[in-house]
Length: 196
Image (tube, rainbow, N blue to C red; front, top):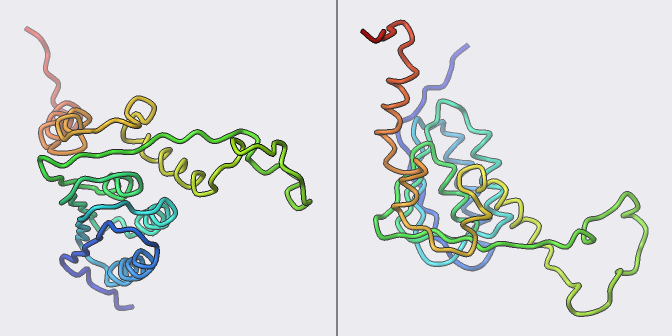
């Protein structure tokens, strides 16, 4: 059986823009790039705007299913917000412009908005005032925040500007020092230092 070789480096540019059609086409390009089995896949995020929550979750699902032999590098050439933050955080190696910032808003979902076991039955809303309305896209955004929370404390940082200095403190960028410290601390267990 002949195996396909891993091909060098692929680069995709993801432009943050408003509108969903662009992301549908870009996701097809992502799948095509991954099908070529790159050793390194670099995604450059650039522009104003935000990747819609549903698209960010789909991109995450595709990237999580990639081969472990493909290293993902995410490069934020612009400030990021919302779903774009999630895509950037997925990188095995993350690069960000020194003056760029991250931002994600919080979202509060009403508990009664969840479907119950009888979702197939037509039902009247519990409340008919204008304050009981919710946007179904907020559920996707809440999922995006759950994934972001694996990297950054969402409750503390939502609604605030996050600068590169804070990302360094969390070890999300320029973490070679942290990586080498951990490798030295935990990597070589055969050599034990005994105090004299």
